[in-house]
Length: 161
Image 1 (tube, rainbow, N blue to C red):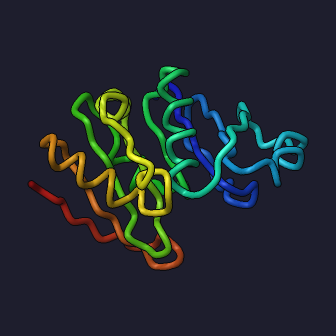
Image 2: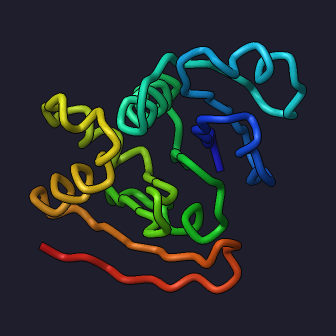
């Protein structure tokens, strides 16, 4: 596995890191940047400026594309989501645990995402719905994965247009 970009909005979200090269990207308004950069998390660490969930996701996704990442895991690292975003076909995995579960995607999805116009509404908290709507509109694979508060037994559901 190549580069995995793991997007977080708080240093406490860093969990067990997957194998390979990991880049942790903190997306926040600067509140936790010093704490994050001063802590050795055994991965490359970057900070992007963001306000809100959508802005944070796009900041992480854009940085991942710039780095040539193979996959993005945002808002929580879960083995199930990571295992679903492999391969060459674009795939988006959305966690359905409120409020706004993890988002994962592969490099092919990042390429498609780069071509979609982003309205201001996509930068707010409802980025999950915007991503799913656009992915389905373009015939891309979308997987919904739900977890209990701890990801013990995932349930999967595939969405189709």
